[in-house]
Image (cartoon, rainbow, N blue to C red; front, side, top):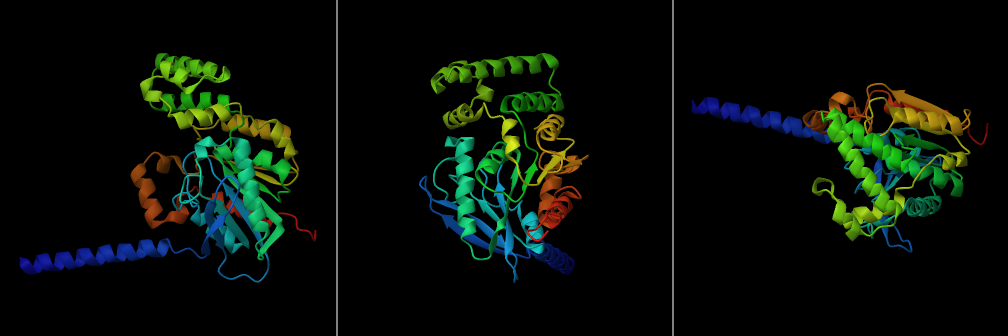
Length: 338
């Protein structure tokens, strides 16, 4: 019996060791990552600069602009498969820690969308000083909330391209869509949904009247209570609307949408982008079984499945074709020689 137990323990340890080695192998990306610091008048910005391991010619650059939330430079390593793919086609990636994260000074909740535009410009200024970067091939990738940042940035910087993943157009209508779609998915009754919408309308009225946080707390429902910092952030940004700013694009735009997105009304986003951006500049990729972050619905709805894929097959965490679409878009961009 003792011998059988010993054999079982040895086999278990071998399997565990093999699994551990496999996970390490899967997370060994074919690129070089450098920690960077960018001094700014608003405080130090930190981030990650990801490069191909071997390169002779100058590189294009993709600046990553995050969506909502306290996001670090790699988005908990979620960006790394795309960084690797970009490195394989001659692009460096630059991504900052949001203010308040990993050494970036300040608080991201104190920022307006214009503040985020200025931050992106500071990153581009830094990138242009790097000797391996071709400053005529600097563009951006941005998700969700970045949809209010990138079109403004396009007015200030000569972007070579823009890749937008699941962007909303109007802050208020996006919030209404988000509320209803999430509550419906959770099986909440129509009566309760309408009650939540009425409460949200009260909050919007306070925002429009420039009410203080104390005024908000007086009417806030406990389960929906925002922190003071969150109230500040919403107060600065709730009027955001990208419609007119979309006219700033002067270079190719790739719009990537997931048909099963319950955060953003992708039909509205596609309609507005097609109405405003010249068709010769716009490419739209709609993935039928993808949600807001380009996960399949089966992955998005199963935390265990998402964790297992992240551990054992991180390059397959997004839906099939997502990174291929970005690679095709970038490799088809016109060059100075065309």
